[in-house]
Length: 52
Image (cartoon, rainbow, N blue to C red):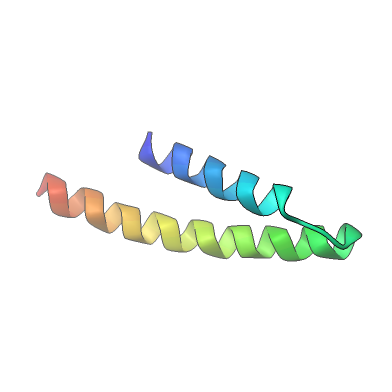
């Protein structure tokens, strides 16, 4: 639940704020990928810390 919601929100945020045509969409996709990777690492750490 945490991962799916977070990744959806990040993808939508960067996708809706993309500008500049195809090049802007490419940049937004890269930013969304990086933000998603960081989100997964941080949220996984937090969930593991709480669970154990």
